[in-house]
Amino acid sequence: MEDSLHPAATTHLPPFITAPGETDVLFNVMIVFVLLMVFLVGILYLRLHALPEHMAHGASKTQLQIIGALGLIALFTHNHLFWIAALLLAMVEFPDFASPVRSIARSLAKIARREDIDSREPKERAAASEPSPKASPSESPTTSEPQWVPLEIAPAPHDDKIGRRG
Image 1: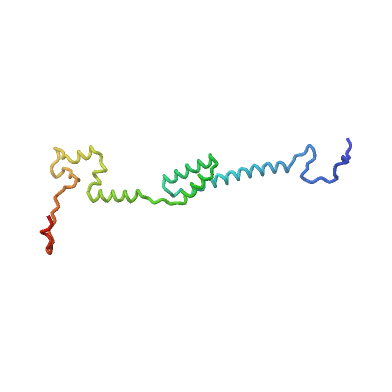
Image 2: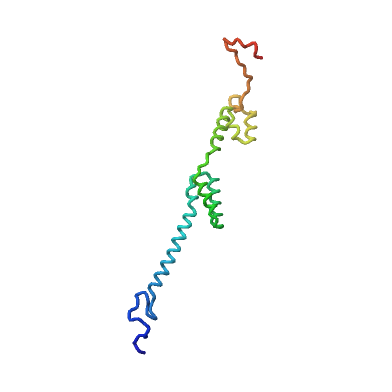
């Protein structure tokens, strides 16, 4: 074979063109670069997609579940409106209505002296209300049910309208 170049070939080739039978280094570097970029862009996309859930982590359980469902719908349908709704829902902090109601219920039970009665089972309540025949009066359990007495209000000393009240 002759070492002469083809008449149409240039005398100087750029460095990214490899000779026949040699390893193409630029091609191998670009394969690694493209795979790495696809992996990193995928991670960035999934992190951005999960942003509403990360924002709502301190919220209530129900709100977090709604946001998670909206995020999954947005992921599988490619409808960005669901993702925007999840993001807006994550930014809103819903008030806690259950805690004040529970506190009011506990306070009312304490006022009525019924908090320990409501927490027991019905069989235990029946057993507690009936004294055992073996126990002496000092050992008998005291019933925690309130003793209802009629309310008698004494008239005020300077009340001149007492005759009009029934």
